[in-house]
Image 1 (cartoon, rainbow, N blue to C red):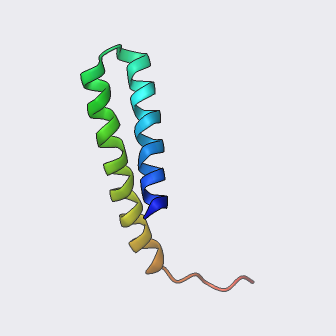
Image 2: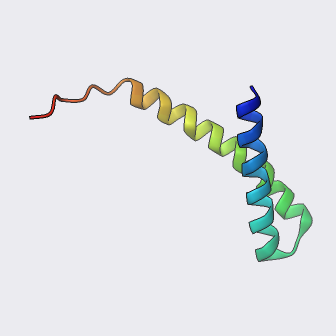
Length: 60
């Protein structure tokens, strides 16, 4: 659980900082900062489910 909180905090802070540097608007930057960790978690869960179902061919 602590790892997930750390990932979310890291992604929020980076997304907020970069968005604020581009548009100088706190409200939009906060929205981007909240949306980015949600998208990260969703994408990670989708990719995790996809990768576990793939069977790799043995190396020649």
